[in-house]
Length: 112
Length: 113
Image (tube, rainbow over all chains, first blue to last red; front, side):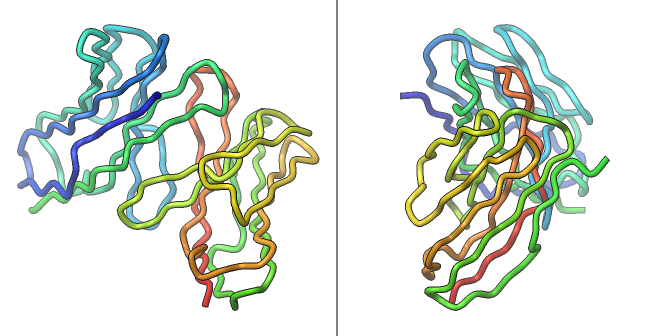
């Protein structure tokens, strides 16, 4: 079946460190891929997305590239800030509107 | 722009009581969803609606019901609450296309004693 697997947290980094959060997926067809972020006490919000192979989504210094050959959509940021502390969710959607699959989430904490 | 409004924000409920969580969106999105979020378990889909007048079951529908009488509203009802339904509930919507993003409400924290 279709699924999303992301690296388990928590991940703790120092400010200005390089961040990678791994996400791999299993899906039939050609899904769209998303990263959502959840700040403390809030709902999820879209961080970035990619809708076809080799697309790169980017926002707020975060990037992720849709890699069909490795079925991956890893999230990266070159220099993290304390304000990036949050839970990050990888997700995929495909043809049926009801089919939105989330990974289990990765909690990121950034030390000053 | 309000987006998605959920109510109540927080509620403590005795087991066996009936409870309705309200969700309203002002974006005219076709598709709406209810998720629950439990520590360490991420998001799990309870029920969804692809368009007004239709609903479907997600991965954890037991003990919950929904209705979609119009485009804007998508209430979630717990007919007889149990402690295992203690969770944070999120309502979300999107246009219904494959590439459309989900918009989430701020969540409703429910504690069943």
